[in-house]
Amino acid sequence: MKGDDLIDIIILLLLFLILAVIVQFAPSPLPNYNLFTLPLPQPPGIMNLPANLYFYIDRRFTSAEVNRIKTIISSVLVQWKFHLTQKWNGGLNNGVSSWASCAQTYAFNGLKPYWRNTPVPNGQMALEIAMDEFTQLFRDNGFKFSSPTTIDYRIPFPITSSTIFGAQAFQQTRVPLSITVNPKQIDRADITNGALEGSLVHAWLHRAGFDHPSNVYTTYFSGEAAMCYMRGFTPKNPAVSDAIYTQFFD
Image (cartoon, rainbow, N blue to C red; front, side, top):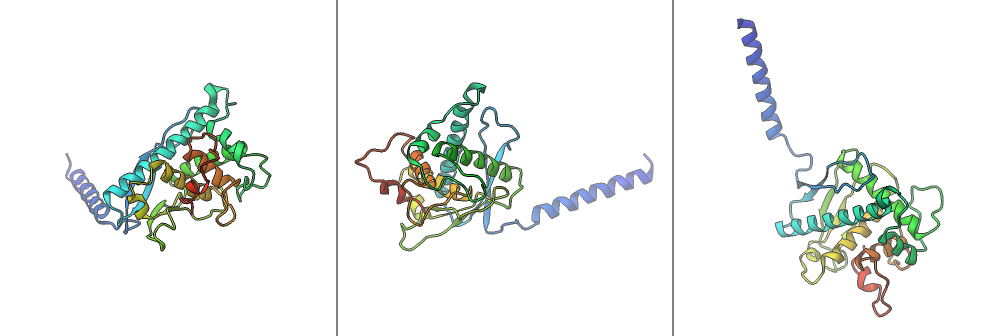
């Protein structure tokens, strides 16, 4: 080997070493957060999906709280896939999911997200639009087209006045799935994972562009779709008040 070639190799190795040191000690893009990833389920008939979603979570959450939040998010992802699988209907793409059927029965207002120009005629179509928008936001997250998704920490007063909050979004693309979570609600063993998942669904529907009047959820899509989820897509029981579910909506 010629001397010049050896020098070139040494220089190249030194450059790789310097780069490795820079990467190791470079500050995190969000220094007060830890990054975790979750696998994205892959529904049939849906192409160009990322393998994972990425979340930056506030470092003040305990390990137990982080694990429960991961479980809640993963469960919602499973139900998103379930809707799309039922709609795919073995390749016919004409199915009506359990979720869409429930929304059709109960949602009559707030059917159109802010970014849509044309009316939405019914709850079934609103649910299908919402799940397609979730798909868009998952792509934006997983392919890093949107700004990083953060899970922020907030203990409100009164302490039960918030569970999972998603700020209202007004555009269709490049919207992070960011939420604010009350750790005191996550800590409560008397709140089921299903209730927390419904709270997340409601928050993400705001991120998807759907809205409702302040503290009004009944008949409004973003409230009824989340309540459908919390009931397992079953009909309402007249003896059970909507407030049992909506207490977890922000």
